Each structure stands twice: as structure tokens, then as C-alpha cells.
Length: 274
Image (cartoon, rainbow, N blue to C red; front, side, top):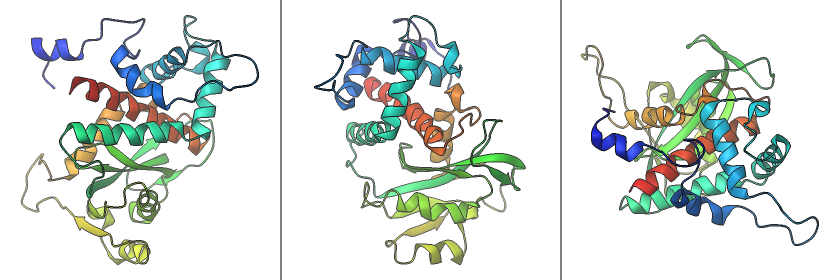
């Protein structure tokens, strides 16, 4: 993206404590989906907006939990809400509803009918947990396997070992979106998903159409490949969050949660600018 006087004004965030903080308009998008205070027990004293800002600060800056600035709620409090919302599926719900909202603002139907699938191999750390070796990329770690709609909004996500090939991991990703997006049945993919193995694995799990989009044999140098560039751009959006530079998490659930948080960050900013 070329920085001009117009784009700088659109993307500049000169308000709040940090550039990662939600604006008032962005907070209005997220607030309705966060759980209300419990009717019994100790009254809630922590502002949920401060908790969300703290989580977004960690996602954007990539800092460790213990390095969270003191003007946010205590680390133990922020961590408690992060794990609670992760386990209750709050991040998935927010991401799903924001995708629906963003599609409608673009003049599309709430549910997509076509999508793009791809994976990204990321190194893991000494934290442990599930990992494997991707012989093609020569990386030991995990794969972030996603499905996007044709606008680039993420509609499906599974994190698994990097030792699992794309065609073997695809059925789990596609089956995970069957109920949430029942009309999405046409999938654009690269050559890694070609062959009868994937089609056989999908038999009996819906009428999927896998369209392989390959690079031209006569092309020289860089070439924009139809449809496939959409999912690559989505990975670029997510990677703006430094927490995703590596997979720092021991559990797959936490690794998935941080990707969803990065996606929520992207969606709120895009929706407000529409």
C-alpha cells in the first residue's frame, strides 16, 4: 500500500493510549458479544473495554503476558478473561458475526457460496505442544489452515501439525464450516490439494467442488494467480499482529484464539472505514 496524504489520514490512530486500542466505533461492534457480569458473586470492577484493549495490545505488539503495561488491568485478570473467552467460543462468535456484517456492507449475502483454502507453516518455540516437520518448507512447527470467502474474510480455521500435508488437513477445515456456512461449497485451491485423495476424503461430507487454480507453465517471474491471491492477502493482514510471527502457544486452542483475535482486529477496522 502506498502511503499518501489520503491513506495516512485513513489509517492513522492518534487517539487512546496505544495504537492498538479500540476506537469508540470499533468498541460498539465488539461490546454486544462479550458476556455480561454474573448475577451472583463478587461484582465486576474491571472494564471489559480495557481487557479487550489489553488483549489487542499483546496481539499487535507481540509482547509477553508479564510485559503488559501497568495502565491495563492486572495481567492475571486479562489472562483470566482471555482463557474464559477462548474456552467459551467468544472469539469465534465475534469473528463469525463480524464477517457477516462486513459482507453485507460490501453488498454481499451474509453467507458466502465460494471460498479459497490455503495453509501457512509457522515455526513453534520451546513452549511445546503439537508440532511437526513440513518437508516442503523445511520448517518444524504448525500449519494455520484457513478458508476465506472471495473478499478475504476468514470463515474457517484449523491449526494442526506442520507434518500434515494440505490435502490431508483440508477435510477437517472444510468440515468445520459446514454448519456455519452451509451454502459454501465451491473451493478454490492450489496444486497441493489436487488428486483423488482429498476428493475421496470428502465423499459423504457434502457436495464440495474443489477447483484447482494453477500457475501458468509459460509465466515468468511474479504472476498474480486468480482467486489464490485473496487468501495470501488474508495471511498478510493477520501477520500484521506480531504475536503471530511465531506460534508461541503450547495449546492449539490458544494458537487458534490469537489468530481469531488478529482477524477481529482486521474486521473492526475495515468495517468502521466502510
